[in-house]
Amino acid sequence: MLACGTLPLHKLASQYGTPLYVYSADHILYRAGLFAAEFTGTPHTLCYSVKANSNLSILKLLAGQGSGFDIVSGGELERVLHVGKAAAQKVVFSGVGKRAEEMDLAIQSGILIFNVESEAELDLLAQRASKLKKRVRMALRVNPDVFAETHPYISTGLHEHKFGIDIRAARKVYAKAAKFKWLDPAGVSVHIGSQIRSVEPFGAALGRVARLVQTLGRDGLKIRYIDAGGGLGIEYHADHAFDPAAKVHSYAQVLRKAIAGLDVHLLLEPGRFIVAQAGALLATVLYVKKNGSKTFVVTDAGMNDLIRPALYQAHHEIQPLKTAGKKTQTVDVVGPVCETGDFFARDRNLPVLTAGDQVALLDAGAYGMSQASNYNTRPRPAEVLVQGKKTTLVRRRESVQELLQPEIF
Ligand code: LLP
Image (cartoon, rainbow, N blue to C red; front, side, top):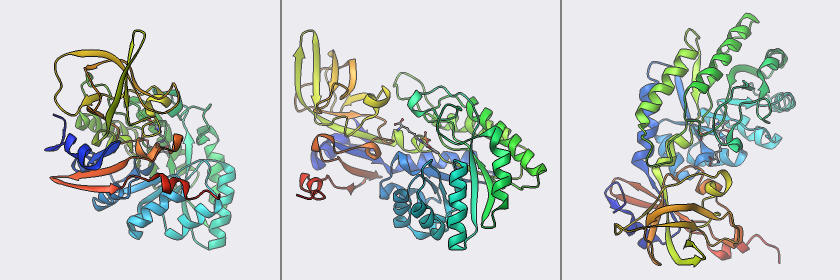
């Protein structure tokens, strides 16, 4: 029987209905705690990447443990402010397309630092800071041209990608930044991609950043922050051994080695690593149907609820909530959405499932609900947070009425 802590998941599925996202607060705190433990002795701030899972209760949980946040929009900043005005002081603002009003809100909220991704953005930030008469800390997000093995859609650290400023051009842009009265070029930032399972590319990228920081120092610019970005990957396949504590340990070693000797404060922006394995999407089997030689298990959850398999060919383990018989069957697990890409698994050997069975799509805590949509006019799932024996509905299911409400008719 599948459980969250000691709580059987089928009970939650029955109580709240499906599709339902369930998260373990204890596991989220455990994961965040691993970074605190491994980076002890290195001045650092954990800035959880809000985009991975932006539920307010999860942000509150992490803020309560002292976490800061990595945001990419004014909307994400509003979420952090909602959790607590003080949390803004540990916010890093990343993203290639910040608008003036988003910058203004962030400047007025007193965020920690802006990660600037282009010269044009630098000009706009200088203009907004001068207008508001606030000195603003900023870093350039440099593109280190480091290859990291991951899905092409979530790889960012090569010159062919839209992200960051070519590291070879950074020195010139810092010189320009230093001339603006209201800008404080305080940091260098880097993010090479997401779901990166080997720690070496992080070391290579940070090594290049460290050399840049030394060069800038010789130019007379004292860099106080290095933002190492996020991207640390997990194992989605059950048959791959995975020890999260060992992973953070080797990650910390590689980062620390890369910045050894520098007097800087390290910023970390993990998202997936903290929440992915703390969450599951629960679904109910609606039908089992055969087309020729293929068997399809149709669930009430679809690609609008969890788009990762459709978008990145991502693998999520699927398990029945109640102990199943020993017999297995090779099936496609699909959703009700009218798209061939609406699948969770193809040719997967699973315990035999029948209509009414409930299943869990595992490791869905990151980029599940935060990427959910209303495609096919489907209300998004409800979300439940489990802490110890306590369960809290932290987002109720949307109604179709709410979806129609903004339309002018
Ligand atoms: N910092 C920056 C600047 C980022 O762009 C990202 C993720 C992160 C931190 C957090 O990365 P993480 O630690 O979660 O890997 N939707 C995709 C992942 C997109 C990641 C986008 N940027 C997926 O479901 O795999």
